[in-house]
Amino acid sequence: MPMKKIHVEFVLDAEVFMRMLQHANSGMKIDVYGDTPKAKKEERKLLPAPERKGAKALMLDYIIKHQPADPRAMNAMVVENGYARGTCSSQIHLLLKEKMVRRVRGKYIATEKAVSHG
Image (tube, rainbow, N blue to C red; front, side, top):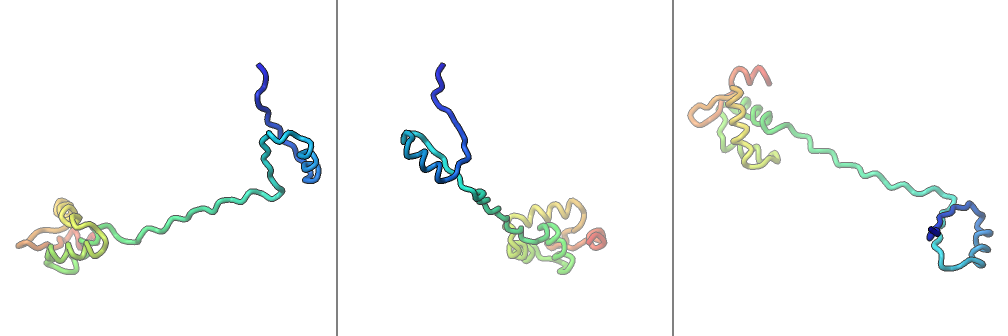
């Protein structure tokens, strides 16, 4: 089977190369690379993540400082710190399950376990 394409690489002076082009068939593909190395792409740097605590730790700190803590005020504080509105109820559930807080008349109080933990 005859070869249809051939790839050959030469290192030539620019002057010799120009003389070759004058005598060669113009129907060929020529890739030309100079002496300078290829420029490297600039690496993308990621922006640092916002520094914040987890919502559960944020809420526990709030409950310890504002006893008894009102759930509506706590929810507003959580949203103000960049968390979703629905975060508060799920985190309160976890804090109650871990016995870090207890509910008294619709408000939350930190237990001894939470105070000694934080």
